[in-house]
Image (cartoon, rainbow, N blue to C red; front, side):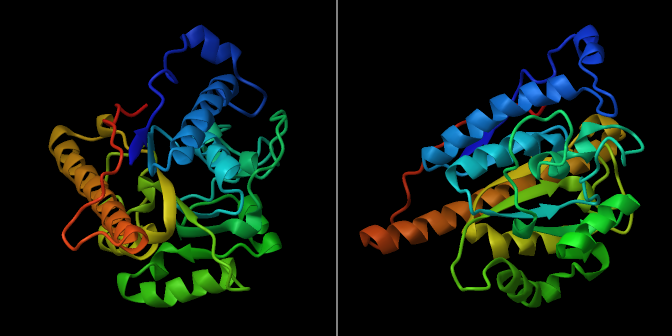
Length: 286
């Protein structure tokens, strides 16, 4: 397991960022350059058999992480947990922020992003959605992309949701790995407030913990994004730090438990032995 981050992505000068704006796409050049570096880091981690946790500042990071994923696992399915659809284009975005455009960029709908599409919209499912532009909703309807409103993301419904996900992603029974792209603003702001775009009426932390139990065993990596402790008062920030720690511990323990099970199956290791695994220290978020 390895934590992948990009500490250089916010080192550009204000002048460089302003000059890097494209019409309708704020900070486009910086996001693009960061994404290219993150793509290489994610691809390298996956080729070494590691489970990358890409911890970053906003969901535009998925442009890099999922591009790297698709180089190694071209048929991987993407589970997008978010309050937002993140499929805006310059013509539909009211803010022009790139963190609202990663799905459009990955799917080849972004003007000026001169790279081929890496994400088939048939390989995408959303969870926790409750804030979007009309054009984004039309995209989901046109391509029949399943999405779970936060109100139906209930822990007790996960067995049913799992069956629905399998039916959509693997209709012929041939399975492919997941990538979990988790934006913490998918969680209700009453349970986590330290994020740039908090939204009410979100999914619960209990649902997310059981979601990880359900889907992480078949995942090869994940994004964890939109954590920003500077957005909260000190007491709330401390509570949210504990929540982030609990989430990361949950992910690590779930993945390592699956790795130990795989080791026992593949190598017939004696009961009680553990996987040697690869570990690197997590770097600071963007």
